[in-house]
Length: 292
Image 1 (cartoon, helix red, strand yellow):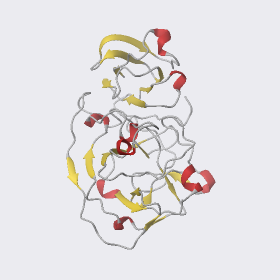
Image 2 (spheres, one colour):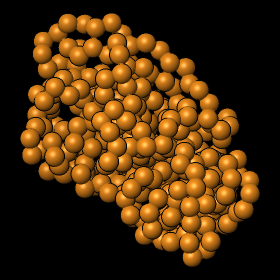
Image 3 (cartoon, helix red, strand yellow):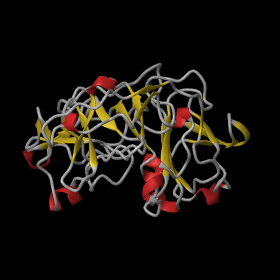
Image 4 (cartoon, rainbow, N blue to C red):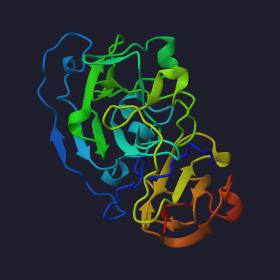
């Protein structure tokens, strides 16, 4: 696994660095957004968040539908993609803490932007390399180890609504291709990983809790080809949000794959990456993973 792959669970789709009490879905508590405040155009306060619902906890722990929100594939409808966004604190082997979405994509900030007021200096070609983290109308935002008061929005020139963290506009990096990549750190001396407090991510000891950082990255295509994917990490049993869909798996540590949810049914112990699960009789069979 490359050095910038996730070392902790916190960020991804199943239970993360702060462990959940059970492996099945549990509903989080939502709170309404603050009333709209009028402010100069281009600032975060100029964009209403009254249509956004905030929920505590990771998205998959709250029963999100596969193929929606952060898990939506390229062919998904705009409505499906706009349903939800996860903002969770996690770490890589080099950066801690760092914000990730529900698919394990790292978030970044740009030194040429401003936080007070929130304003983006990345448009056109820049925005193709550094796609803004967009929040759809009526979206649900799942927060893990991130303060709700840190979250805001700004309206971009094209009319889309961009997520801000402590005023700083949030972006992805187009060259991050695998779960947990953070290849955008330090690019041009102006791009840096985004921390939960809006600051720049720096080197630090990866988050590891309760003695386990085992991880199973599930891919729905062979040879780890990018597609619908998720990362299950932490301790005990974790259910896949897309059961019986994985055709390849990358692992950290030793895990046990199970054919039924709640770690039941047929099982297989895995301690190395498997590019084609059909070679071990487990293609489109993984429904849950025991992580230790």
